[in-house]
Length: 172
Image (cartoon, rainbow, N blue to C red; front, side, top):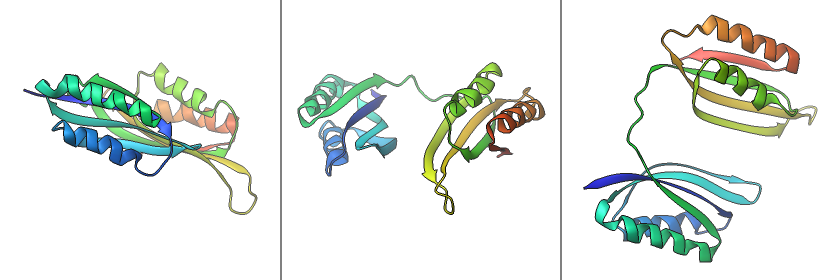
């Protein structure tokens, strides 16, 4: 029987790191299904979903743990299966001057409404003309059918006004 596994990892960024992981997956007969990988502050981190024959699960775990000798911290978790979508997808974009608390304020508003964050990308960069530090985020949300987009928009407008942000919601 074949099962899915989620691998999380972090290590010092270096050439060949992804190949090391891919080699272990291939050696154990696994199939790399999807991933999110990123370089952040001199580190390289990611999450990978693989499928693997259950008879290879133990040696797979051991082979991944052996990568610690190469400076990689790796964890493996059995995946419970596909998550069924329970609503519509909405994309939230936020941009404005960077300051502490932006993610906390937005995520608190989402959590209070039981909205599921499906994916989030954020960064801080320099504004082209002023070199001011700008926070930018793109958040994919799952909005339950019964949830009010207008009410969420009103709350996010309050956050935007208090934190000098531009926050937009786009339904997909």
